[in-house]
Image (cartoon, rainbow, N blue to C red; front, side, top):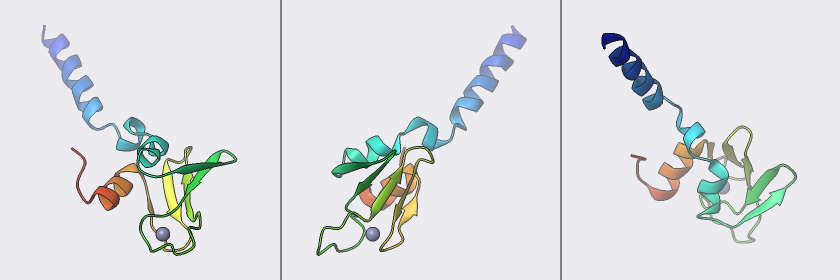
Length: 92
Ligand SMILES: [Zn+2]
């Protein structure tokens, strides 16, 4: 019984410490909010973090690394950073 409890405890602990980027796909996260365009094995979009007068696709999304980078304003990070910056709130 004790062994089972320990196993369950370890399992829960592991599950909680799972990095966010493994749970949330950045392509889906950004794709739900912005129009994406496929660019080889990556995606690009119009950056929402700076004023785009020409609608240039400066936001590059890398599904393998689960990161986004804006070539113009330098905004970058993973799913959590995007969500916080875009929605202005913390993930639960
Ligand atoms: Zn930008």
